[in-house]
Structures are given as C-alpha cells and as structure tokens.
Image (tube, rainbow, N blue to C red; front, top):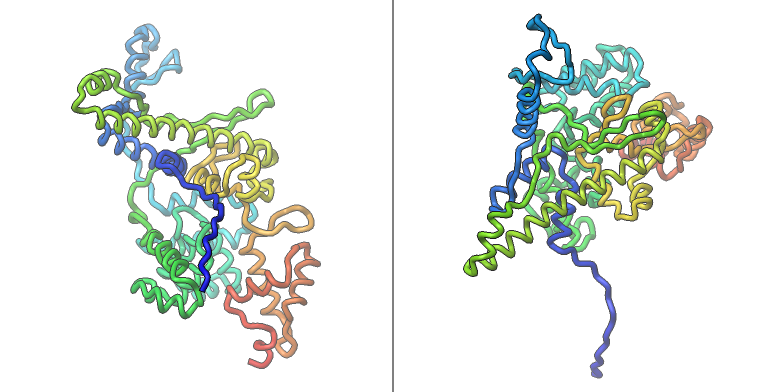
Length: 445
C-alpha cells in the first residue's frame, strides 16, 4: 500500500470574542440591553452606569431649580410655561395581556366585522399560559362560519406578541417559535411534531437512523429545540411594560428624520480615577488589562448596535417609502436577504438587528419584523399572506366535486387566475402542512 501526503488550503471564519459580544448586544431589545449593561457594570469596576430614570429626574430637578416662581400662575393648577413639568409620582398602570393584544389588532386594516368579532372571542378565550382554551368547532358554531375561516383568524392571532400566543398545545407553541425563525434547522418541525419524546430523551442514534441524518445534524437540531422557550413567561394579567420603540421616524418639512431612542438606556462610561488606581498597581496588571478590554468591548458593541440600527432605518425609509407615507397596508415585499444585501452583512445580522425591536412612525408603532413580509405577491403587486393562501386552498378543496377532486395543478391554475402567483410544488407543500391528502386519496381513500 502506497501512502501519500496531500496538502490543501481551506478558508474558515473564526468569530473573535469581541465580535460575538457585538452580535449579542445587537440582538438585544432596549429592555434587554438595559439589563445587560447593569450586569456588566456589576462585574466590571471600571464601568460607571447612570440609570436613565435617575438621570431624567436629575435633569427635571435642575430645570425646576433654575425656573422662576413667576413662571407659575396664581392658580395652582395651571402653568404659564408648559416647557417645564413638575415632577410627580405616578401609580404604575396595570395593563393585562388582553389589552396588549387588543392594541395590536388595528395594525391589520383588512379585517371585516365578523373577523374582529372572532378575533376578540379568541383573545378572551386564552388561558393563563396564553394558550387557546376553546375548541375551534365551538367558535365555528358560535359565529356560524367555516372551520377554515376561524383557523385563518387564529393564524393571525398567532402572529401577535408575545411569541406563542394562541397556541393550542405545547407542540404548537414550539412550532410557532420555529415559524418566527427562518434560520431554524430544516428538520426541527418534524422532530417536534413526530418525535418530541425522542428529542427529550436525546436519542441521537435513533433519530439519526429514522431520518437518515448524520449524528452531528441530529445533535444540532436537538440542541436548537432544547433552547426554545419552554413557556410564555408571565401571567396574562400581570403588569407588562409598554412597547418602547427603538427607532423613531418623523417627517419634518418633507424630509424623514431618523432618531434612535436611547432615553430609557443608562449612560455608560469608564471611571478614570479607578483606571489610574489599577494601572499604577503592578499586582493588578492582568486584572486591569482584562477589565479594560471588557469595558471597551461593551462600549464599542453599543456603538456598533446604534450604527447598524441607524443604517437599517435609513434603508427602510428608502425601500419602504409608501409604508411611512401611507401605513402598514402599503408595505412592499421585502426579505431579510434584501436588506442584508444593501447593508453588506449576513442575513443573520439583520435577523438579530430586528429581533424584539419596534419602530415608531407617523401611523403608529410597529414591530420591525412586520416590515419583512412573509407571503406571495399577486399580479396587482399586493401581498397575499400564507395564512390567506392556505385558507383559499382549503376553501377550494371543501367546495370541490367529491367524485372528481381537484388536483394540485388545477388548484395552482385557479389561484394563478385569481392573481396569486404560486407553483404546484408550493400548493402541495401547503396542502400537506394542513394534513390534506392528495386528490387521488381524497377520491379513493
């Protein structure tokens, strides 16, 4: 046997610890970033954090201290100058998840009266886990409609925040999380739907054999599933924080002005006196070096997050001009890939940037994710959601001649004639997802 030595070149990308931290900071919402900053400050003595609320109160007190008593009217309950506000204690308003969900309803402008009634009933039928606590058949009878109609409204509810609202089971709750993540492993849904017990038992070899997958792929998929949220956090009647927009966009004299909302974030700086103290002591040389490196990584990560969000907003104003002028009904088809291309970054970076973040526009506050439309474009340029297409597909099958059921190609032709550009393969995929058998099995099954 002849032995030979071969050499080859291979380029691999290794993420530095600093870059990993930057990506971690990028995906945080305002509330999560605030908590992360405080956690870092408690670990690192070089960091000085000034809480946003304390800073705001200090600024208000200084304004009042510099304000003349003549500013106030002789009437105790009115002011001559409304630029200053007297600091007063306010009771925290208790807001239930029901109210929070109702506030998300106006985002969807094309709902009929019966749609709104069904949606309201579904919201009021959620249990303390925010799972749906009523059978769809009961809703069908109550509103004298079809099962597919109620199912389409439930699909809409399941797009609301928090993620998982309206799930009918733990499995469906996990699947909703998968649907929100385009980078989920391709077999994760099948693992959850068919073999959740094997996933829980970490039966890697059994799953590998059943699905003809490598052990590495199986382990990666199982690890992903185990890291999904096990439940919707909190009770639906607890106090929840108001949505804080991360980006504010307003029109001033015909120009769109972009502003990053940092009002609720604490300010972070490096304590120079502590730096001088540690730097002068040779016993703390390594400790000082590591602390300074970690502090700079945090400051740079926050700055990089701001730059990425600003660039994202700047391109959104250009790519979604009609949305900002008219509203959500004018949003154009746009994928994460489209934004990644113009920003010159990977899709996963865009996914992190929009995760859990909101944008304030002249028409209201919207999740950034809502601007990345999921659906198919019809011939008029409007977007048909996947939920609507599935609903229409089911209607066609329910109304078909049972002796001569519609083939997938026939359904494709009908939908294309209605302006919905869709392939036969996609029709088959949606049909299978709804557990509807083929036309042959519907006729002879």
